[in-house]
Image (cartoon, rainbow, N blue to C red; front, top):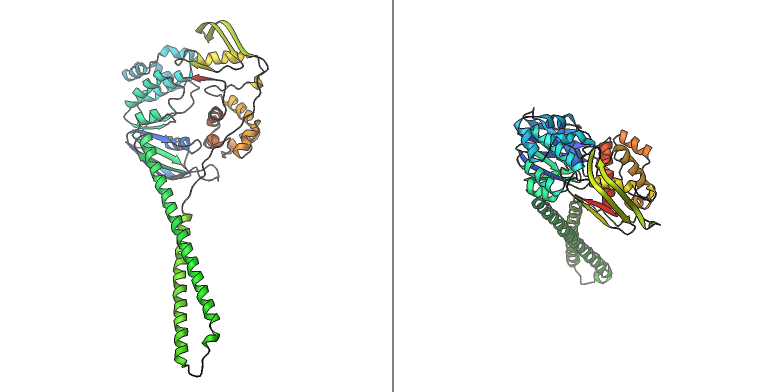
Amino acid sequence: MFVRLSNITFSYADFVPILRDVELALAPGWTGVVGHNGAGKTTLLRIIAGEIEPSAGHVRFDPPTARVEVCPQTVETMTAAIANFAAATGGASRRIQGELALTPAELERWPTLSPGERRRWQVGAALAAEPAVLILDEPTDHLDADARELLLASLRRFRGVGIVVSHDRDLLDSLTGYTIRVHEGAARIWRGPYTAAKSSWEADEREHHQRYQRLKQERDTLRRRLADKRRVAQSAEAQWNAGARHRMKGPRDHDATSMMARGKAEMASRRISRDAGILRRSVDRAGQQLGEFHFKRAKGRSLFVDYQPAPQSLLCVLEIPELRAGSMRLLAEVHAIVGRASRIRIAGPNGIGKSTLLRALVESSRIPRDRLLYLPQELAREDGIALLDSVRRITSLPRALGFGLSTHDHLTALRGHAEAAVVGSALLDAIGADADHAVTAAGQFLRTMIGVEAWRAE
């Protein structure tokens, strides 16, 4: 079993290609996919999965009938595959449920399951389908430490072609044998897990930069030598012209003597001109070679998001006899107070009630909602669009990033034409690909760029 990508190029509309001339061959085992936000990782996965067609090139599976399962980054809906997996009585499905600590009865309360619990059901259903190719997009998102170890153990048992996009370096180092780096339109595969592969491409980049510096020094040396040759030529010509009157033929001069002197001078001038021509061509050649080197300026700078202290000392006061998720009782005798200067960490395993507690605190807030920033783990479509509109109103943020943000109507139009509108580099690939991924990326971007007073620890 293998997957081969031949000459893959992809762009949205007539924009600059996100991927160019990608050549990859993937064999059984796990391969990690890494790259900056917006580099094209998810686009590459969608091309392999057949969800979008490349602008050029093709993907070939051997055998052609190979089954492909995809686990996207968001898990909102209980799919038929998950329901069938929960209802299955076969040995493989039961084994995977046991490995991932899944209980079929949990699906009765799917809307109240934590994102981490949903993630385990999603990956479990994909593994139970026994695909030849399994594609995972950020599989450890939302998982606590124990659930992460359970998932990792199950993934290690997979024997097909596994492709995983992740920012979890420990996961990549412990699971993968090869690494695809998506960078500046290229996708190159490196031997080894993330840390080893990163060392290899950083060594290549250092050598690339060193070659550039050596060639630059060589060009500068050639320029100095050329300038010296030109000065010598100009000096020789000036000396010849200045001494011309002293070389007037006298009564005892012979024509041959004057001709010999002139011949020597012309030979020296031609030699200097020839050497200068060689040096000039060498300088031009070095300049052309330097032009073949391409470097991108590193992104990133400090951003300032203004804030105002809350006028009241108590921001949230939650006093309730119990906290429920649907019909399930999660916590009893909840007494929580959040002060203006509070810095709070909420910890606990998946499904214990962290997200439900945060929502309850938000609902009990004593400050206006437009002064409260709440970033849930996963965003519904309408919530994501609301966040994009909120970011648009933060005037210092787009200015620091170097562009303005679209209004909701303009963003929707861009999305409909599959054009690459961006809210920072984190949204480049997502908004160009589809609206739902753009919503997810909006939340990721805000979590990265904006500090919050309370956060969740998985």
